[in-house]
Image 1 (cartoon, rainbow, N blue to C red):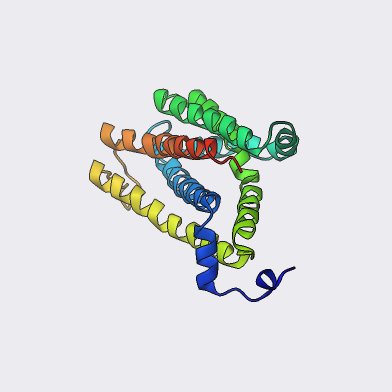
Image 2: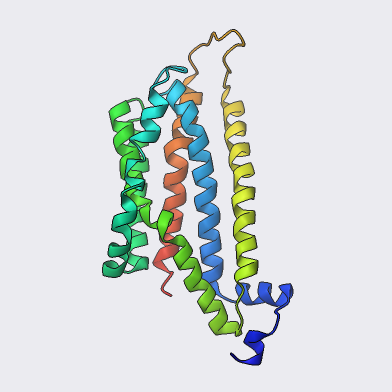
Length: 230
């Protein structure tokens, strides 16, 4: 290794090196969008199950949405890497993104049908297989590009940014969800367990947060991967 690659690299140089790579910037934007939309959707699903497609605390609807709707994420790991070898990462991400968006749109169109919601979540899970299992590999490719341009590795700084993204998006996601519920007039169940049906505005927001937000996020991510020709 040359002297520049082997010496200790300052944080300032690591930041400069990472920002000099459009691929590093793109993958960080992709990770931010993915984790933000995922946080919003996962937390909104409780409200969607209680007030849109099921009844409050029925003990069944949320479990079905979580189990059946995400069933493909387990066995999908056995399929994803053969597909990567056959199709390439970029093409697989784009195809997966289109499928995930289709799942989100389906969920919004048939929001009050549990079978349709389960089908929409299954479609979305199929489409998110690439971003679930291959994103870190793409990040490694971006870091290789950083090294190619700058002459040194920036793995430590990138890992820190990734950790910050996960932490920050968790807060932003919950803030967005709580703000939306407040603005649409959500009425929480009483302490004694009694409850009333939520307004159409609340139900529409819960549906949008569960299906629309991740669909919108995956649409942007898919467009970014069109240009991720590393």
